[in-house]
Structures are given as structure tokens and as C-alpha cells.
Length: 350
Image 1 (cartoon, rainbow, N blue to C red):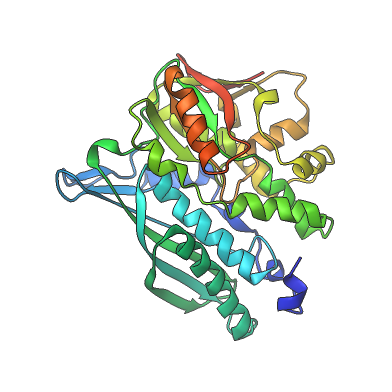
Image 2 (tube, rainbow, N blue to C red; image 1 turned 60 degrees about the horizontal axis):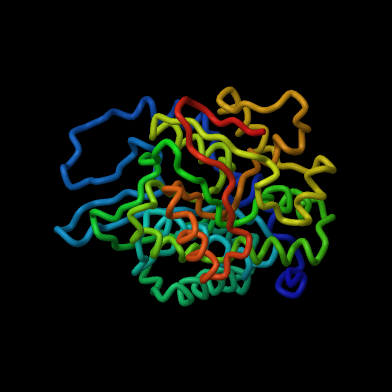
């Protein structure tokens, strides 16, 4: 790891939780938003808070809609450059998950200036800028404050045709479910914080969390793609449940079909999990049906918070090959079919 070369301390020591694992628990978030008054919404607001989607979408004209999102978190790794890269990749993922193409970003920066050297902060920002450069967009501004924990992320802005917005609540019964990235980032981050993650495991973690979800742009063009989201802090089960609730359907998964990062599989079996995994289960576990013989590590993997996770796509069965080909062209070697949508409610895993 490069952390020791950049600083004589660990970035993660300044945060109570890391990456998307520090998101507010889903049950608590629902209670918070339930008290938010619903006011008259403009007709051109195509996607708001109604379906817990990845970004807001506002129609500008007949051929363009603005996609806007913000995402930021505390350090999930100790290397400042990697932290910046992961946070920026995660933020732009929301744009791709709507089928849009990003065109600009703004930086969201909160740093404990009395604790972090300026060189470390500059390195975090450089990591984020490198990801935006890879996405072909500028960081055109932002806002910074002095806070107790390091926080970094982006406001992401994108454009999409209004008719090609990929919401998370338009899945259809019989749709195939395809996941673009392997699971287990939360388990790797837990191992990292304990100081037991191997160099190979760290490399696997960085490779997954810094891979831009660029297939989302092309998937937005496919009529057979009915719904799309990205899997982040609520885990695979939580974000799939958002698709199920919004679409009025259920989902069936086969655990053996799930792609899993090699070393995460090891640490999961050792019981190395994040506290956010348990909070996720408390928030929505009643809607998940597992076999009575399911081991605890498998349940934890389903609720494992994924920082900068993969796209989850619900598409018509005859579009499966095209969707998988798109992932393959962009270098997503772990993309695969993991289940399908069915009549009913909740998620069943066998």
C-alpha cells in the first residue's frame, strides 16, 4: 500500500465509519424523509425523492434532461490519492446509473485542518481530479469547510435524453437481473481497518472501487433495459429492494451466481464484517427470505455496504446478451446474471 509513503498516520483513524458504510441506516433514513413535507413539484422534474433513486432529473427541453447528484463520505482507505479516486468514482456512478453522461463536477471538501497536512489534502483532491479526467469532465468548482472528520466527494452533473432516463422503479416481471461488479468491498474495508488485509486484497479493493460505471451510458440507450441503479451503502439486498418496492415486484436470486471478490470471500467466512452490514439488516431484513441453513457470512454479504459498487440492471431476457456484451467491452470481467424479477414482494435468495 502507498499510505505510508504519503503520511505517517492512517486516514481511516479520523473517521468513525468509512466510505458508503457511513451512510445513515435505511430504516432511520426512511423515518427522516417521512417527515419531509411534499410540496407541489414542477412538471419537468422527472425524478425526485419519490423512489429513492440515484439522482434527480430535470427536463430542460425535448431532447435534454439534467441529472444532478451529490455523494461524499469519510475515508475508506488510508492512502489519500486512493481515497480521492474512490470517492469521485462513487459520486459519478449515480450519473451513469441514470443512463446519463457526466459533463461537469463540483468538489465537496471537509477537512480537519489542524490534523491533516495540506499535502495530504492536496493529494486527496488530485485523486478525485484524476478520475474526473478519466471520465472526460472538469471539476469546475466546489465548496470546502473545516470539520472534525475528513470528507470528500462530488456534485455530479450529467445530461440524458428525457425518454432514456433509467429509473430504479420500472422493472418488469420476468426481467433478468445483471450485476456489473463483484461484492465484498465492505468486508475488505473491515479487514483493512483491522490491519489484516493483504496487499493483494487491497489491490482487488482499489480495482473495483475505482472502475467507472461507464457502461451506464450505453445501457441508457437500450429499450430492453427497464431499470437500473448502483449498489452502494445499503448493500445488494437493500438496493435491489428499492427496485422491487418501486416496481411493485419481487426478486429471486441464487447465491452461487453472485460475483464475490476473492479475498472478501475469505474474510466474510472469518466473520470480518462492518457494523453497517448489521444496520442494513435491521432496516430491511424482514423483506429478505433466506433458507434456514444460510450461514451468517452469506447474509452479511447480501447487506455488505459497497463503496463505489456495480450497476444493477433489470432488463428483458432477450437483452441479456447485449447488456453483458456492453459490460465486457468496458472491462467488467465479473458482470453476470444473478437472478430475475417476479410477481410478489421482497427478495428471495436460494
